[in-house]
Length: 313
Image (tube, rainbow, N blue to C red; front, side, top):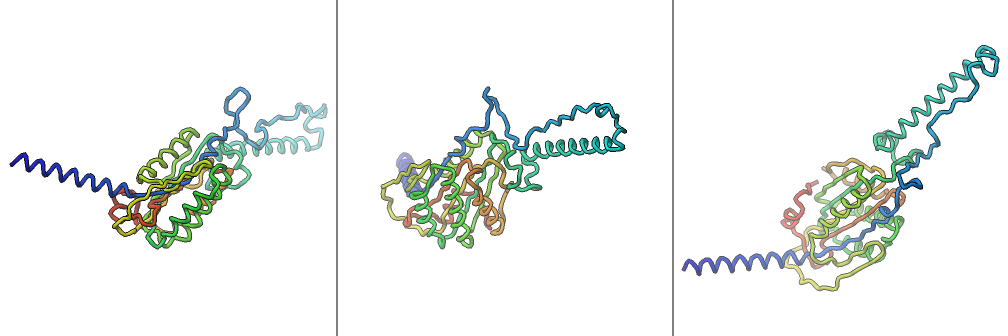
């Protein structure tokens, strides 16, 4: 009898595991991405070492070779003009020293808040650094139209160039803004500055973690190539309650330092900031959504189990 009892328990466990696996295997998703910006190498000298592009000319001050005698006349020979000239030189030197310190701070991101992201010193941001951002949103079923619109972006959008990726990012941000009232849960992550190789690896790992949450990728567009899965999934018995959209953006310069979002105003601010990233600043993009099939489901219990880091807003 004991053996029969254990056999029944084992069979029940196997059946439950198979049923659960089948339920999770029903999950579908879609994505589009590109990493074109990471392929652009930093400015380098002929020897192969890193050479930053300062864009503001030399910061070395070369003093005129007048000599202290000022051509034999002496400092006082100009009736005070020599002193004014020296003061002017010192002031000019001070200006260049200040600009040098400001450029150094700007390249490290320390003056982002003071000078913004689109001033004359943008060209001084080091080209071998990356900043990675991840915004994840769970929207109610009233936003189910996003499934078709994101699929259309994947099938028709240009993922082979930075300009195409920037356009896709802007379009995605616009769609999320239009559906802002449907956003129920949100999470945000920001990292950087990182070396370029580490920034690309981090972008890839974040994307892989999200894509692994579903088994059937209905549409996948990456670096100009589109793949579609023809597998037909059984219709879910559950009701579609949520759609999860994840936007991962890698940039050349900082966009923000968000740690969390707690209300719709903050979420909209993050969406707007990421959507405004231009092609010159964009290193990589990944947009992932699930479910992708209209007959697939994502319940609140599924959401809590699969996305425990999302916070209610």
